[in-house]
Length: 492
Image (cartoon, rainbow, N blue to C red):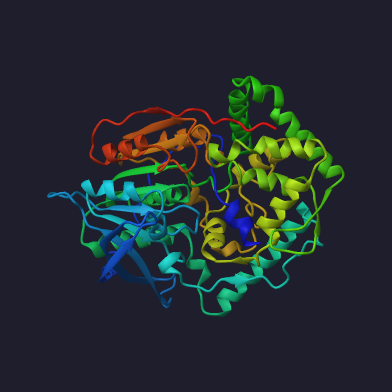
């Protein structure tokens, strides 16, 4: 069921506005020599067919700096040389996930922005520990993957994840992997080691989603190392699990778009009420769907309750292009047709052998949840549209490895004077503008950019976003608002 984790990992929020504090003194690594980078020529091929000459760099760090006897692991990055005659600090891209590869991201739709940012300085696509070319552990395949005969209910799914992730952690540990070294704080120390290895006084940070979480950790623990930052899809340090109330507010914004379209309004006069109606019915009487999967000759029958549908919804709200079809799924279920939902659940959760890669699971467990936030979450789970599915498998697996938790000092809010641009989309169903505002309030030189009708994957959504990012890194005037056209909600 790796698709569960891939589909539904990430988001953010904050509790009742605790007092901001000055960042803790940076974790000094002055007694440790800077790593040595080895470079090799690298022909970088983007997904659009463009090829460019770059450099592949590798350097070693401790797998766990808390253990003087920890093994060394190798981290990799691709460096695109600056086109400026007087380049500024290098820009390091921090991928989301957790678990995303910076190098692979550079091959995709963000490639033009990677190239444009070379006007500022070298641009570095960094593969964080445990990801991409920096992978340090083998995937862990589950032992008893549930088949279609096992109902996809909340009880069964949560029990499966708690059992299998705990077993995988034991397996990695027994194979010599120091799994407790896979935390966002260690990840941030890696970035500062990279800065030292590059021989530069400061770097620029460019991140999204979990990459913003990592970027904030750098700004808290290594503020002297960062010149400027651009962060999108903001996930604060106590926001690994997002507030369901903000997700409900997101659906209210979706309803406003529906109401502005007479055809959509007639089809979905109250989307939230329909969703609640479907969930209540499925929790009383789970649905059964029989169909023949693509590529198969025999039909399968699966049973699911509201939890499975809420998981599907949580995985369909990152961007406007996906949420526009979500009401159709609920309308079919509301009419008693469970086939579409059944096919989606089968293809996403049952068709492929499940497995875990280690880094994503460890990073989320380590960042954890403060007691105050957890108390608020539990109250909101009970009444919100998508309940506790937004960041599955968190908080469901919380506590299975308590020693990895980074603690309250890590999650505490902080102040910063590093110039930082915070980008939020109003139709981002993963991370929310209101929560980003709380984090940005601690930044004396921060600026917010609100993208009306923008989603989570914002950098490639419109050329104006890239222009704003480039302007910020050039210390030029940057807009505070950009507006996209609203999505066209699909109707029957």
